[in-house]
Image (cartoon, rainbow, N blue to C red):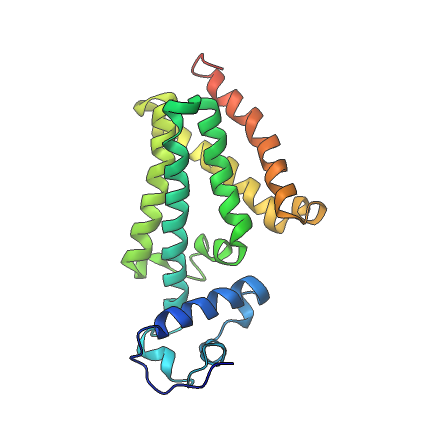
Amino acid sequence: MPPRSTDPAQPDLKQRILEAAEHLLEAEGLAALSMREVARRSGVTHQAPYHHFADREAILAELVMRGFTELSARLARANEQISDVGRLEAGIASGLAYVGYAIDHPGVFRVMFRPELCDVTRFPEAQKSGTSAYAQLERLVSEIHGADQVATLAMVYWSQVHGLACLVIDGPVGVQLPGAAERRAYARSVLEPFARQMLAQTGQG
């Protein structure tokens, strides 16, 4: 463990706290995440985290903000493939980007969509990053189906990929397929027929 620090202003302290918190989420779950334990893992006094975060929810909000930012970037990269690989492969890539984030960061993913754990309406930056991620989903739907279909079909796409992500990281699929590569392969096997079915509605399937 690094030497305990009493200096709350050291430049990397906030990052160390967030890294410790994310590690706790991923390795031991939300129940293990407390301000005192985060401080211990960060090698600082138990009061030091309060110089950057008011409480545990504030730490979670920062992790949620970062999670949505990364998810948005992954979805954006998938969307940018449309002109090169076509709507089908771009649609599959977008789904894999979503499910892939859940596979890579299950602890943070579980918190991102649970307002009783982290109410993003209290944290504008977290809420803004979530809106940006959803905008990438709307962009995909607009590219495939046209702007007039976004309001209805964005929820259809989101329901598909979010449900699949939950089954993969917390449901029976995850039990049967514990490896990340296996989970990604399974996700693609599910997402491809879904994407084909959705494309058929446009007359391009």
